[in-house]
Length: 78
Image (cartoon, rainbow, N blue to C red; front, side):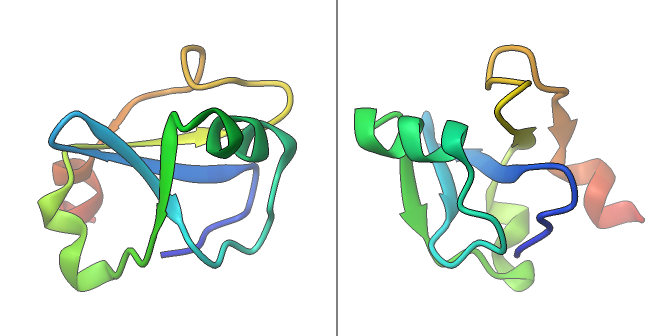
């Protein structure tokens, strides 16, 4: 997946946060979280999105704690 509209994506699975390995936007918040080890780069395909619980969009003005939480179930229903 790769949205890049307003920020970088991160998805949670098994207590770990992942971000697309090849994003449209690298993002400063994403870079900081990668450097600190809080998120892990991974190939996230639409066919595997159901394996994740939640998606968040992050950017320089909206960190992970402040970002809206979107259930993957709601994304897959659309």
